[in-house]
Every structure is written in C-alpha cells, then in structure tokens.
Image 1 (cartoon, rainbow, N blue to C red):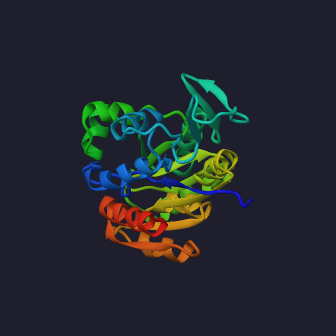
Image 2 (cartoon, helix red, strand yellow):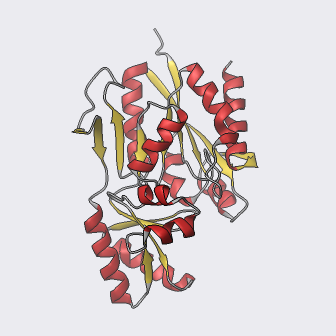
Image 3 (cartoon, one colour):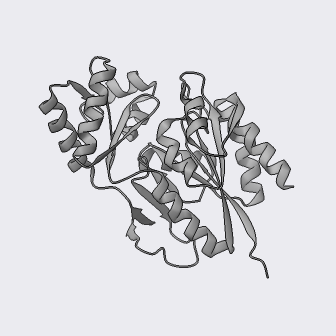
Length: 277
C-alpha cells in the first residue's frame, strides 16, 4: 500500500505569519484556522526566542513543535508524537533538539571579533529592554521576551557600512559562527541554521504519517535554508528590500506570493488547501 501523504507547513514568523511592522497576525488568522481544522501541523520557525514563540503559540492555539532562534533549537511539546524524539532532552514539558551552541559562547566570540577588527557594533544583549522596545516597536513585556536569548545573538553595526559588515561576517564565519540577515538585525549562531531542524521535522512527521510533504514559507535571507529543505517552497513577497527576487533566484522551484506579508501568506495557504481539496 502506498504511504499516505500528509502536509506539514513550516513558516517563518515576521513578515510571513505576522506583519513585520505591527506584529499583527489578523490577516493570516483565517488560513491558520483552516490549517487547524484540516489537522495540518503549522510549525513556527523563527529568529524569535522560545519565550516569544510560546506566547504566539498560545495566541494562535497551536500545539505543534516550533523552532527558535534561527534553527538553534526545536521544541516538541510532550505528547505530540507517540514515540520518543531521538536525541532530545526533556526541558520544562518539551522534548528539545539542540542544533546550536549556547548563547554566552556565541556572544563572546561576536564581541571579541568585532573589537579585533575595530568595528563598533550594537548587540541585542547590550541593549536595555526600553531600547529594544523602541527599536523594534514592541511593548516592554514583548521586549523582555525578545531578550531571553539562549543560542542566537542579533546585532548590527553602530554606523551603517556595507564593507565593514561584510568584513565582520567573513571574520565571524572564520571563527566558526554562522551569520544570517534578518529583517532588522543580522544574526549570529554557532553551527545552527533553519535547514537542520526542518530535516528533523521531516523524519518525525514521516514516522508519524507514513510520508510527509513539507511546505515552507519565508521572506528573508535567513529563510534560505528553510526553503531549500522543504518540498513546496513559497516566498512571501517583501517589497521593503530586494530580498524576494534574490530568494527567487536562490531557491529552485519556488513561487512568490502576489501580496505582501500575512495577506500574501494567507492567500498562498488558501490556494494550497483549495488545490488539495
């Protein structure tokens, strides 16, 4: 008998599921409701922290696994799978798979490398809660959650300089770190990217369903590994930069939404589900 093919949706959050500026998910709510009604897992895969994603999971009524801090860790709520998650450790009601290394080590290398090059940077960890709130358009409560980094460190140059930015990223890579470009900040991790946990999700859901077809949504360069690790690749349009067109060139077989942000995400999910019947 041919294995049953079941959809699993893996999505970036900012600029896809939620609005990049307002953080509202109102425009994507109808599609989220349809996914939940159809029993299709919706996996959040973001640069956000575990604390931020837990809050969003609660708002959306999601109980599926989620991936935090640019692929550094995957959190599987206990009981999601009727079998143990290989290689996971138990943490506060989750089976956790770690793909990155601890935040303190990442931050130390970042600061030392920037100082050696004479490049002044602003790190997320060095910013106050108030500064993060003002810079990112968050409430103080949301900013506190955003600062609870466990693996990944967001940073930016104190003065915009593309040449210095490239030099720093190249030096960080030489030091064993992985750089990625997000919506507001560059991010740096040790050994982590979004592709590794997506591959782990494929194994887990294929074991659960017989065969899993992964659908991926992304809108920025730090989603490249995510999109290349799924079967159906959808780029959410982002006119704020040339990222959409760059991703379209880099991701084979990808399609791009007509609308931007959550509206585009919702359209694409709706069309996908309509096509699936």
